[in-house]
Image (cartoon, rainbow, N blue to C red; front, side):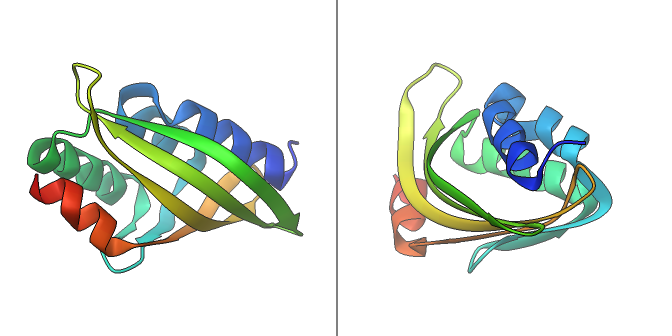
Length: 128
């Protein structure tokens, strides 16, 4: 069984594939809660995939590169400091955001993922 840190590291490394859809399908449960503070909340795999689909349609986000800057665990909770870079299908960058996140792990599954970031930064690149 992987450690919580290994689970989150693998999830984040895989997130760049197909907008994160395979990672969500692999590591989320039917009840996983994903919170993008001030932007969205999803529950379960299907809502998370629908949110990803919506971002691709509305903002053109095709790929998300997660650059892990720091990671630490406290039992089954994993804290991350990240630079998330959003790209279009042609590889051009839409924008980047510094994020602090917390993942809660049960077994090898993510049962909750909360991200905290400057919402105005996202609004700027979503507007243009």
